[in-house]
Amino acid sequence: MTSRSDDPYYTVLKSKREATRFQILVEIAAHQPSVRQQEIAAKMGVTPQAVSEYIRDLVDDGFVNSNGRGRYNVTKKGVEWVTNAAETLDTYLKYVTTDVIQDVSVWTAIAREPLTMGDRVGVFMQGGLLYASKTEQTAMGEVTLAAQPGEDVGVTKLSGIIALEEGTIRVCKVPRIQRGGSRSVSADRILDALEGMDYIGAVGLEAMVLLKSVGVTEDAFFGAREGVLEASFHGINCAMVIVDEEFTGFLKRLEGAGLPYEICDLSIS
Image (cartoon, rainbow, N blue to C red; front, side, top):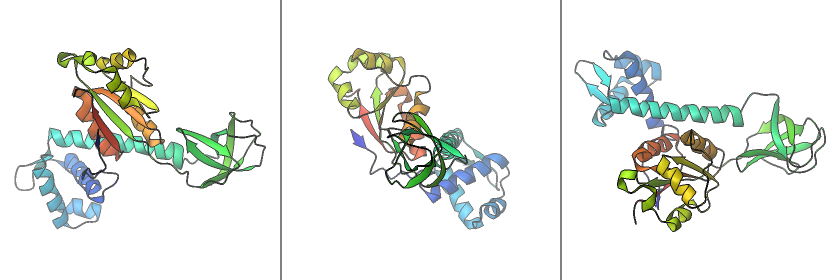
């Protein structure tokens, strides 16, 4: 398996440079073919020289075509990059607004112990779910009604930040049927790849059939990409079993989201 820990790629979410490239690319797309670098610079609070350098890099990377005299257009590669980055930002925004800093008067959590109205509780994420207990946590609140262990309970006056580490995603590449499909992967190999993973997504019938052949049912097939990203944002370790034709595109989405991942190529014997 190949770890991404040494990958030099900087994502929109983690790198100011990539965030600036993203914004400039969006501005070019919005005003192409006549692009005024000074207007972009003023809008973004950077120098025209900086915008010029960024555009030159975008041209070198194949994201933008230069037609001379300030005329530019975004290439298909650039459109795909912007789209993937925008989808990633949208997914992350939904996670932040619904699970981290949602402006609501009452949060819903699962009681870890008997609670009574008015109890001061710590709120924490575990296994992708929000829990409340009397143990001190980085986020604290007040119980709105009595609850027994396992019941849903309301928490209000929440303060602090809910501690959460992103889960690891293990991306398992399966050959398409033209290259052997599920038959070309041994049971031991796929079971080893799934070890320690709490959420499993599948993309492609070959991937689904492979999982079923070893007695495993995926947690998501339709909408698996979004499910795996959201589960990882909630701190769950995920496996994505995916056909090779969809493999590269999914890795780009993970890189755009800044999520850690490992690669397991099941097509290699």
